Length: 155
Image (cartoon, rainbow, N blue to C red):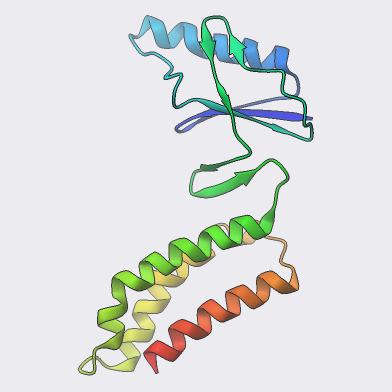
């Protein structure tokens, strides 16, 4: 069992609710001394490997439980679903693509430059974090469909 709590760019990982509460309190004390406060509405927690809902309150703070969240650009899910991560990256790459679609449609721009734009502006968005993905056949097909869509637009 692993419990994750996060607040924007802080991620607290613990193996038990007790240690997570201690870690949260240890973060809260110095933050309060510096005039900072943990935002209860934006702080959430996720339990990996257990379905039981037992951690909600630390001292005076109450948190919401979630099944997934984005941390450093990567979708983290309670069941470590790689397909969800890949679908999220495809969605983000689609946004990049639609931001450039007028340029990719333009007749007065050479294909060579359109390919360079794809490789430098869209593909990195798609493949961010790909080193950690375990691909299934379905995931490979989704990535292939996306890439063919871009290549068809360019050519």
